[in-house]
Amino acid sequence: MEVDRFRPFILLAVVFLITAGLGFLLKAEFTDIDSDFSVWLSSTFSSGILDSVSDIIDDFGGIPIVAAISVLMMLHPRTRIIGTVCLLVSVIAWAADSFLLKYIVARPRPYDFLDADVAANWSEYSYVSGHAIATSAFAAALFRYSRSISAVFFCYSIFVCFMRVYCLAHYVTDVIMGSLLGIVFAVVLAAYMERVSDLFWAALPPHRAD
View (cartoon, rainbow, N blue to C red):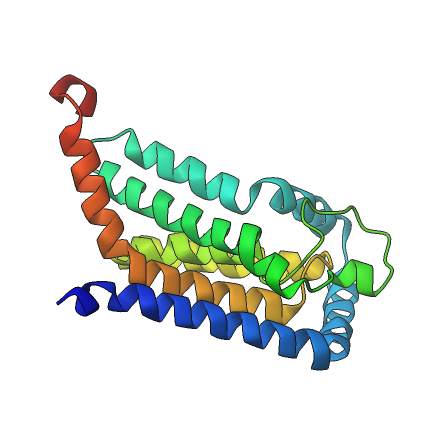
């Protein structure tokens, strides 16, 4: 019984390690191909408008917007459980990438590899994309409650991934693997985070909970 209880977390750890292993492979064997695609995409769609949008996405399009929407949902009694689950899942997935996976793989960002004059991000490493993992985890967690709203945020996540490759902050494999890993985090953690949310809100005094 104890093994069954921890089986999803063991699965998540295995997926995380596989993702890290693939990161070393991509870093060693596919960086040239990835960089060529990044340059092609950036030059093909280059425009002043997208440059401005890219700056906004860089600063606010990942975990900040995800956290803000989650907190807004938490303010309403009918959606506070959903908001809490989405917040916890997204933050855990983002933190696992930003403070662990990026530094394990240590893949330089495309603009460093290409020696491009691009504003630096807060982390010097690119694998996997924190924007991708946070937004996809958020969208996948929402799927448990509303498929239609989840689809909207999956579309948003795809757009964010495109912009991160466009601005040469990430390779396309960074955002693909980030999106997949974010979904895995949501699938594994959502049910557990719902229990945590139920306990948290139930523990609050009635006038605080409402």
